[in-house]
Image (cartoon, rainbow, N blue to C red; front, side):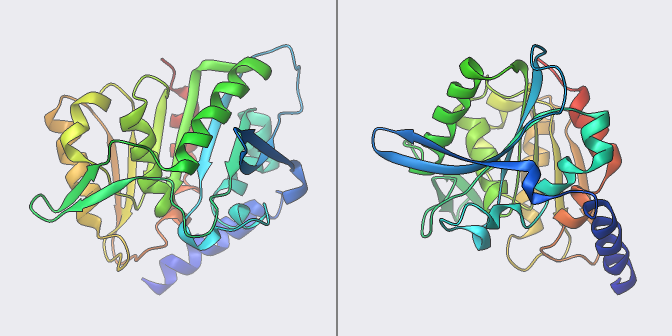
Length: 252
């Protein structure tokens, strides 16, 4: 399995060699005195067109205020020469502040899952405000808003979906967890779930539970579980060309 991980790292590194952090502008969203730093990729194309909006949520290790660490994993795959030519899109990568989270959930030991709390976290509230602002100020195709995230961002992906089920056209949660009791409310959203079979940080059972709940609710989600892979399942997820092609085909 070490050879598989080495292969994934090499493939990812080769693809990202074309991508540059400078392609993402530095931005700040302000709402009632609260701020959310984010980086934004804008397509080099006709600004009169409408473009998909990809919302990328990083993991817990990239929290902070440097407005840079969130570019470490995953999101740079959207900024390669190949993907920018094939799938021009507006991509935003917000940064969650230290000691805060994208999701607001409580572990439910009885169901071995999560229970969505009534109020969103402050970063999630700000993120939704940012999306609403971009809908009005940028050429966003509101029928093609996608959300994805890894680890803490995987939790955030489910959180955003379950709180705002009519906002997103598709989702790719990677090694995350959500409230399976709300699966029916998001069954209409196309989804591709990724996890590692030996993840020591976010047990693969969370992803499997959501997959089963969605399927029971009538959805047809994609599900990829990498054998003998731990927490770094995002190395395969974001370098998967089939997933990228699938994502950009989705619309409301």
